[in-house]
Each structure stands twice: as C-alpha cells, then as structure tokens.
Amino acid sequence: MSESRSARPFFVEHSPTEFRTEQLRRTVNDLADLGLAASNGVACLICGVEDGGDQLKLLAARGSGDVKECSCARPSDLGVAAALNGEWSVWSRVSGASSPPCQMVVGVEAVSRLVLPLGTQEGSQGVMQLFRAHPEQFSSEDAERLVKQASVAAIALRNARLYDRAQVLFYLAQTVSSTLDMGQIGNLIAEKVAKAIGAKGCTVRSLERLSGQLQLVGAYGLSHQYLFDKGPVIASASIHDALDGKPTAIHDVSRDERVQYPAAALQEGIAAIASIPMVVKGVVTGVLRVYVAKPHEFPPDEMAFLCAAGEVAAAAVENARLYDGIRSDFDTLMDEIIFMRRAAQAVSHRERSHT
Image (cartoon, rainbow, N blue to C red; front, side, top):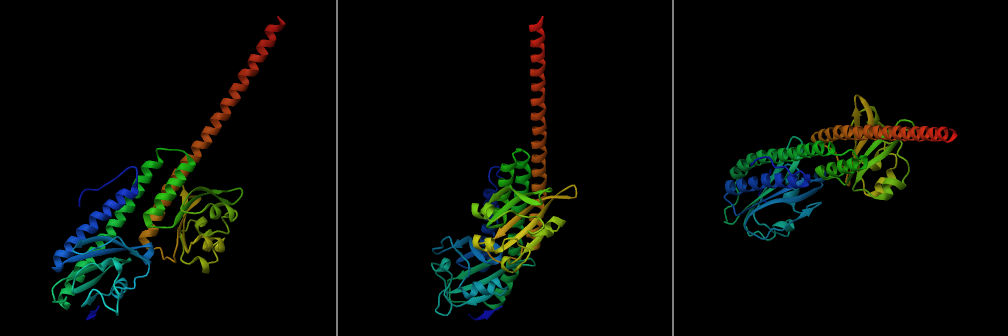
C-alpha cells in the first residue's frame, strides 16, 4: 500500500422487494459505469453496507474479471476495512501475502487498485474499488479527484435507499387499505418493514389496556418459541419508553435492562431492538418492533422510516379493530333480530293454535 487516506420511478405493487432491488440496481450500475470511466480503469466494484455496517454486499460490477455474488461480515481485505473507516488507499497489487483481498476481486486482473469510501454524514454507505491494468499506479491527484466523486456517489446510494423506503411506505399505505383482516395486515407490515432495513425480524403488537399486555398482531422472521413460549409481553416491563410515545433504540440487548426477556432474545439471535410507538389521535395503541442480529445504532434516517411505518401500522390496525368491532356489533344485532322474529313467530303460532 502506497498511501492511505434514472430512470423513471419504478413500482411493483405485489412485491416491494422487487422495486427496491430494481431501484438500487439502476443507481449502483450507473455509479459503477461512471467510476469506471472516471478512473480510466479496467474494472469497478461497488459494495454496499448492510445490517448497520456489519456486512458488505456486492451491488454492482463493471469491467473485466470473474466477479461473483459475495457478502462478507468482517472483511479481511485491509483496503476494504480502511474504506469502511473513511480512508482511501492505493494498492500496487490486487493480491499479496500482507493483505489477502476479498474473494470477490480475486478474478480481476489488475496491477493497481484504488479503494474508496462511500460515506455520508449518516455513516458508511459502502465501498468502491477501481482497478487499472497498466503499471502506472493511482497517483495522489487521481485519488483526491476520485474521492470527491465517491462522496457524490455515496449520497446517490443513500438517496436510492431512502427512495426504496419511501416506496415501501407507499406500498403499505395502499395495501393495508385494501384489507381489514387484522392478522393479514400485521404480518404484511412486519415482513415489509423488516426487509426494508435488512433486519432479522419485526413484530406488530396491540396494547390491551385492561391487562397491560402487548398482544401480537403480526410477525416476521422470528420463531414460534420466541413469539409465544417466553411469556406475556407486559407493556410496563418491556421497553416501556415506547408506551410514553418515545421511539426507543436498544443498541445491545445483553446490556440493557429495559428488555423484558433478554435471555430469550439472545437465544433467538437478537442483539438490537428498535421499539416504535403506534399512535392514534395522540394515544399509544401499540408498538412496532424491529429486531437486528448484531449490535446496531439505528441511524436517524432509519428511525425516521420506522416512525413513519409505525404511523401506517397504527392506522391500519385501528381501522381493522374498528371494523372488527362494527362487524361484531352487527352480528350481535342480527342475532337479536333473528331471536325476536322467532319469538314473535312462536307467540303468533300459539295464538293461532288457541283460536
């Protein structure tokens, strides 16, 4: 190492994971093309940060070489590791005993490699790697110029992710208005919210005022044992800040006393939790919770998305609850009408039999 330092909006009604993938693909492919052209190189790779910075996933590849789908939790590649900490670096060889490269770049035939951070004020968005085949290494001037372009690319990547999340909210708002089945709505919201931020799982719970329990409405990504066998979820004992209307992030389940069942959470593979109040007309009616497999900070843009999702969930669950109440009242009324009719018919029958 020598130095350290589109297209129209796309929406698929039946699956937000499809438009999320498509939007992100368009953005990163454009960024990879621009990086390849700007560097006068033979290849460009873009890896995105997933799961709160604990995992990298290959998003786009342009140029020569055998590049395969790859994800790594802790990169052994020193250049990639430095980029995650905001430092660019130039390497004279793609491979070397001092720093074995990530497996995804082994097939790229190049003499020089520049590894650039894709970072914003909200944190690392990923890493861009640029490769040259000729002996001339990336100079400091090259690196500084490309670092500036990488900062713009990081903003574009972040905006693409924000767009994805906005589309998820739009999808949920449309879909939940088309059904009033409580269980279906809860499971749908839990699945799409978890997938939108790459979380392990999600639950939607409704607050029962009389018992003080948080009753499960919908869930995704969690085992039956964790959901039902650990015991009742008591509102006052389970991350109670959310019941005061405060979005709450538990960064490390093993060290936070606000978690009601920490042992069960750890056994389930849960390391961090975000608890979002579901509010209707100023009153907390339930809680949306997201579960992450590793200690996680939940950046502001992620919490903003979860709060918006909590509002959608609150409205959807409340509408379903009101519908259930109206349907129950209607069924009761119809039963009473039928009973009264049958009683009247019985009285009429007796009167006719006496005449």
